[in-house]
Image (tube, rainbow, N blue to C red; front, side, top):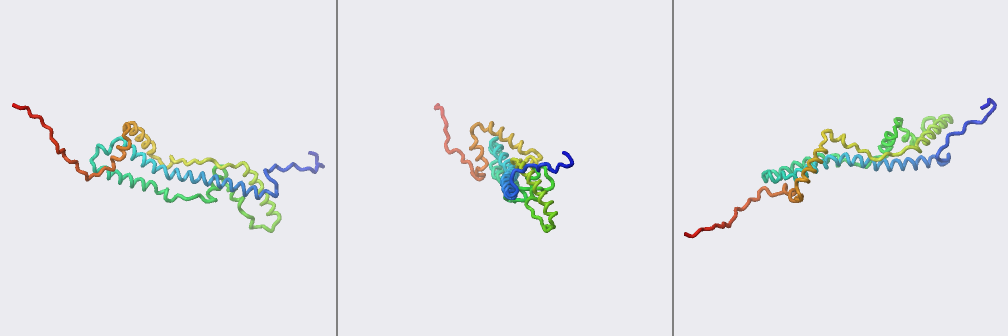
Length: 218
């Protein structure tokens, strides 16, 4: 370009007009927040639900293996109480489960996109200090414009609960193995073996009242 050429390089294209920038930002952010909230809730739900499923799988698996059939009758209620207590303790996060807030959803999108300076939160902020200064307003508008252009390429990723971090002892693998072995061992008697833990320990077995005998005459 010659020194006398007063033309300037064209500005990078934006996916919206200047007058419609705020509407695009708001609409784009709302869509990201909705998707991120659902994904974040599913992540929390699965992480909270996995320990309960492990306890339930262990109970069903040992029942199919016939554990309650070989133990004394009083072992069934004791085992049920133990598994129930373990299930309640493992379900403690389910009782605290809540719908993610908007800042939490934006924070998830920022982390998933590799941003550390919270650009999405910045888009929702307003200029307070230096609002009457034209230079401050120009710098703020430029910052929002560049961030909005980057916003067009941001996507909210699918749920990634990483529930294995809540199970360092790999108990989920143990429960799955017990279920598979128990399923193959029960051989169709799945319901009977499952309810065998609920048998009445105080039920007495009546002795047979009939006696069949054969006498050879002399």
